[in-house]
Image (cartoon, rainbow, N blue to C red; front, side, top):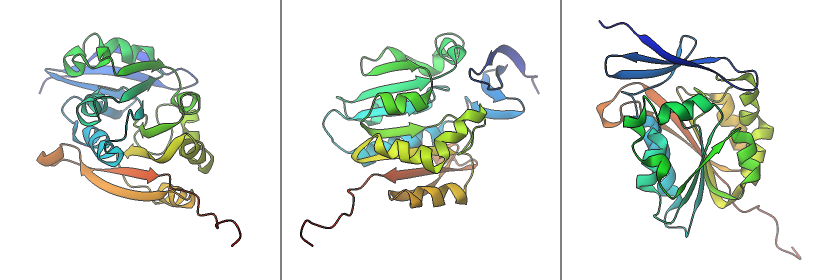
Length: 232
């Protein structure tokens, strides 16, 4: 068994912990402490986040998509392949080193995705990108291992009732919030349902059709307010 080799490290801005880029042979991993955030051999559920989101957007004209978290680029590459050709895709990444790795040791995974004319790279907090760039047809969040601030504690706010409400207000009508998680979270499902959005909880496999661990995706769609018609 080949040993893991640390290629680089990064401190997450805003009071976050340390990320490490690790390599073992042809396998790469980005880790937060002992937690593996992503692995070059496991891309199925991240790709499903984009492909299932694209199905829900359909053929809307010039849809605007926000991807929270660049990671190893699996979600972005799937988004470029799945969303309409006239889409505008904003990728929010807080950690500068993640972007540097995408153009360095992980360039073989990212390909030309960051240079695609449909893509705008937003180096900063995804929470700020949500409010600054609205309205969106799709907001995809894959910045933690689930609906809690693993990479930095302040990310917790994204998954609170207030954070969900902020994302909802940043969506175009019929647009959706999609969240990736390594496991189910009944409390988060409850908060989504309480937001008034239409909620789907879907189980996908880490390796796609090849199987692997079960991961969870949520899709919460903003629907018209059920206000009574005037005079009724």
